[in-house]
Each structure stands twice: as C-alpha cells, then as structure tokens.
Length: 321
Length: 194
Image 1 (spheres, rainbow over the protein chains, first blue to last red):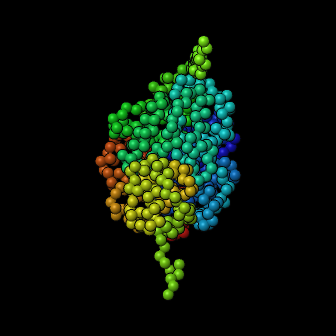
Image 2 (image 1 turned 45 degrees about the horizontal axis):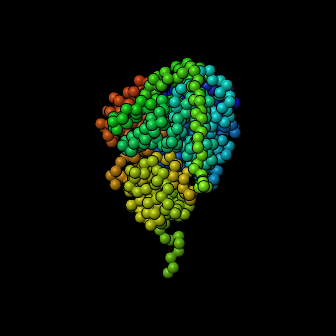
Image 3 (image 1 turned 30 degrees about the vertical axis):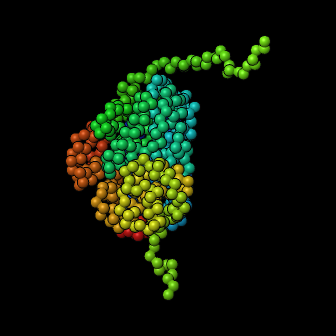
C-alpha cells in the first residue's frame, strides 16, 4: 500500500523513535511511505494564534506539494497537531471560499496551487487499524506482550479533529485499545484517555500544565498500568520528560514509561528493541518490559454464581387446623 | 439623519465573526449552558470560562474580553467543541481572540504571562527556516522571560533529551525557504497585516 508521508518537525529529532519504529514495522506490513518533498512545519498551535491566513498558507504549501507529488493518494501524518492542521486547512479551504482564494493567491507567489479535497489526510493510527487491519497485524505477532498492562492514550486532536469527522469516538476512542489487545497486552481502563496533555502549556504556565499531566499519570497509575502507549510526539514529550517535574511538584512517585504504539507493534513482531528506538525515553521502559511473560495469562475461570438455596420469601397461607 | 448600518462601528461580536473568517457566525446561538467551561481541562486557571467570555462578547465588553487570559489558557483540545450543543467553533473563536488581543496590545498591557511571545518566537523560527527549532525556542524564549528556568532546562530536562539524541543543536532549514517566505509575505498582505 502506497501513502504520502508528512513526518512533521518532531519526528526528525525529539520523536525519532516514533519514526524509526514506524519505518521498521512498515516493512513487515507492506506499507510504502513517500515523504512530502521539502515539507515545512505545520505551525502547530502557534500560528493560528498570530495570523490566520498565513497559518493556512503555511499548511497550504505542504498540501500543494503533496498533491503535485502523489496526486490523490492518502497523506499520512503521525503527529496529532500536524494531522489536525493538514486536515483542517483542506476542510476550511473547501468550505470557505474566501480562505481558499487568499491561500491560493499566496501559494501562486511560490509557483504552487492547491485544489481543496485533492489530498485526503489521515492519522497514522487510522491507517494501521483500518487499512492494514487488526487481523493482518495479529498474524505477524511473534512475541505477544502477555501480562503487560497498557493504558492507551489518544490525547485530543486525533479523536477530535475540530468539527470534522473522526474515525473513532471523540470522547471514548477504542481503536488503540483493540490494537493493543491483539498484540497480547492487557488493556487497562483509562477514563482520561482522550483528555489533553496540555500541549505547549508547559511553556505558558507550568503549574497549569503539570496539573494536566499529573491527572493523566494518576489515572493510568490508579488502574495499574505498567505503561502508557501514545500516538503523538507532544503527548509523549509532556508525559515522559515532565514526569520528574510532576513528581517534584506534587510529591508523587510515578515511573510510567510512555511509548509510541508503533514501538509496541514492533516489539510484538519480534523486532529488536534497538531498531525500535527503545532507550530514547526518559522514564525507562525496561522495568515494564521485564513484566512481559512468555505464557498467555491464565484465563480466570468464571466463578459460577452460587445458587440460592431458597427463593424469595413467598406469601404462605396460614396452615389450617 | 438616520444612521446607516455600515456607518456604525462594528460591535465586538461582529469583529470576532469577521476575524474567524465566518467560522464564529453561530456564536449568537450560545445558550449559556456552560458545557464548555465544565469540559475545559484548564478552565480552573482561566479568568473567565468560555461561557462567560461569550456573554461578555455579546455585551460588547471589549477590554474585559481582550485582556482576559482565557484564550491563552485554551490548549486547543477541542473538547468543548465536541460537546457544544450549538456546534459553536469555540477553539477557533479562542484563536481569533488571541489575534485580536495581540493586535490591540491588550493582553500584554494586562501584564500577565508571556504566552503571545511564546507563539511569536515559535513562528519566528518557522518563518525564517521553515521548521520549528526546540532548542532555539526554549533558550530564546526562556532567556528573555525566565533566565532561571533556562538554566534549569539546560541542566535538567534539556540535557536528558540531548543525551538521548532528542534535540537538535543547529536549526533545521528547508530548501525552498525563499518560496515559503514569498508565500507568507503575500498571505500577510491578504490577511490585512504586514
């Protein structure tokens, strides 16, 4: 299967392990990613705060190059913000003529143009779960993640791409849960799975940000998670790199590794940890990985409900005599 | 003489709608239910909940709205938007309020956090290189506002990320930077800003 690929700035450095693990599993899954040539930053959540037409034009350049390069092939973004910005710009250009006109006049200055609707933008998780399919993934599992308790974390923009249709439930997504189960892991309840990690808030008001991160870590910990699986570089950075700061600020003692779902797929496929970027995380994954068992968990025998010896008290007739 | 509609100065509500390229048109259908504020992860730290901001906009309370920290504490998670019974584009309205506050200098005047400058520093790297640059962003922004934090960053988390090969020392740059600059220059003219 061939796809256009928009990595986004984080994948180059901070989230390199996401990129390497994706490329490692892509081979096994027959996925062919063609990177958008000379792509630029999507503007994250910053450009819209300053100037909206340039923010759309910035993303417009990527869409224009992608459509020229790959025609109507699906364009895959592994980062939540990149995914949202690409999908949203295409959508807004299609719905709002004035935005479309302005963006195209600006693109013309660079010898480019973009017809909204040409490129169809998807997050990586959707491609893995829907296009590749859970059965195909399960077939490739060599070393199931038995006994590893995972809290699947979706964050905000993948389940809720603004007012556009989502491939999963906006508040209670389940696609990554099912995926992790197919890898053999135990998926724990994680009610805050679609709550925000705070994004850039660590830089604006650290106290606000640390509280958002604490809630997520506490929730995963409360349900006994050994590990959090994530699909976004920003979520990974906040939950992983700020875990020490949360512990220092709140006097907690969390050590929950935060790994990309692609790393976990790779691990279950039997790909060596090194090729999947393990070791780049700040909160080490090793203690959690040691919990993986070779044996499938014993299925708990369903306890039969003891039969009531007596039924509900029934009205009785007074005995005659 | 009868005053024509066009001669009247636009209300704050009309300005917000214009600033969202029309996305905020149904703001006047807000029923003040408060679902937005109740769903907001950072609502506790906001001067006003989104519901209150919308009421203030309709009352034309310009300074109160544009000097509020509310839009700057919005984390763009779209939770309120997913739940709003009136399908109001709340997140986009928050972005519009940020732009208006910067334009009028009202947020800075309030002397609160330096959120607008964080966005501007981030975008500065993107406009000049075509890519974001975390190290440059952290040092430039922190050195200006919280020099102590910059030292903390460099010796703590910064170092942890660096030793794991997760941080660039040199800003990455795209090949077509001149093309991008031409596109952005034109789009700024069209957006009404130079």
